[in-house]
Length: 131
Image (cartoon, rainbow, N blue to C red; front, side, top):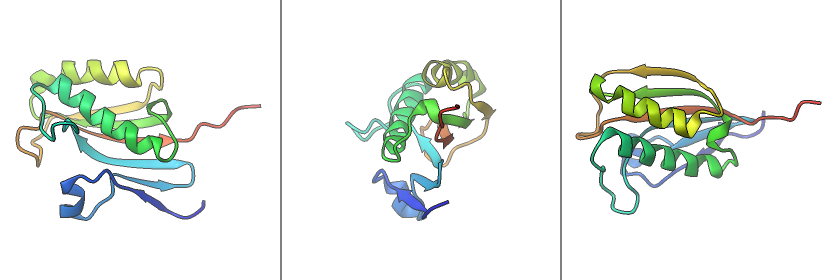
C-alpha cells in the first residue's frame, strides 16, 4: 500500500489537536473534518453556503497535493448545527461533488468551532482506468 503520507493546511486546529488535514494511504485519502474558514481573511464567512464553499476549497487544496480532486470523492460527511442550513449545504455539495455522486451522511449536531455553520469530511479514492 506504500508509505503513509500526511498533508497539512496550516490550520491552528491541526496543531492544537495534533491531526493532519489529510492522511494518504495507497490510493485512499482521508480528509479531516473541515470548517469553512476563508483562507484570505482567516474568518468564517456569513452563512452556511459560503462556509461550505470555503470548506470544500480547503479540502480541494489538500486533495490536489495527493494528487486527487473532489471528483475522486467516494464518501462525504457533513455536520450542520442548524437543520435549517441543510438545504444550503446540500446544494453546495451537489454542485461541487455532484459528478462524483459520493455516499453522503449529513448529521445535525453542535460543532467545536464557534460560529461554524458546517464541517465537511471527505474520503477520496484514486480512480483507475477500466480496460
